[in-house]
Length: 291
Image (cartoon, rainbow, N blue to C red; front, side):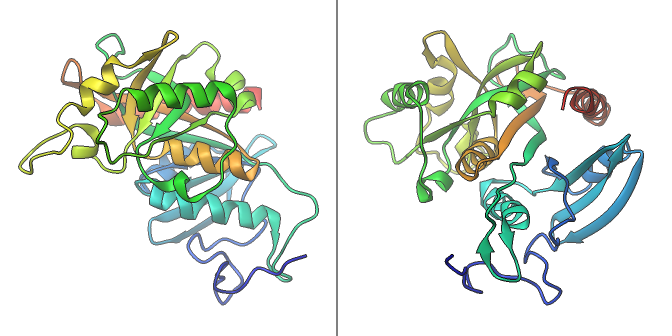
């Protein structure tokens, strides 16, 4: 087997993954990701017991149990640049022998559940509701650096979206889908839609404050998109990267979006912390009951 060089997979002095500061065995097969490091404790407070707490920079990890189910919650920080670090190092922790620096003969598949905030783009999607991303289109460049295998449905949807962009656009969008098993388990009975993952919060999501934007009609393009009855429902900053890398690495992923804002109605949640806690509890209850 090919040995992975020290400069490609960097380890700390104690043998842990460079950024996550985790050792093989520190993570469960079910991993909940959150953007905000302070939200890790808001998830792990639902655990019956916590066996591990580790952190480095914005990457905070708690691993513990609900009943006999082992779970990990990990903060990623904001954006798909951080997702590149988190997904690759999570995969390395379960699928690479750190001593020999070779890929394991038997590969493990993680279940990755993102719980994050998001903004809806249609008036009929209620603030404070939960929305599951059935697929995500990335306006960031992350998956342009990795080989992807798309099915016909994904290719058709991506091509339809590209056809709606201005001819002189500098965007090179990609697409990725939720894991089928997780979508069935956690998405059943919930509102679903196609998510846009943006590489920033302001101009990349159609906001303008002081700097003139180069795509003033971006929000209208996104809001008006419809392909075979499928529409784009919300904006955030990680889902497409999580879906793309998870699929490429053989993991299952799903993104659970707590809608705190509605761009169409210009409404924002009046109790975001309470709403976030409510949905975290519901997601964990459903997760432990179905997985």
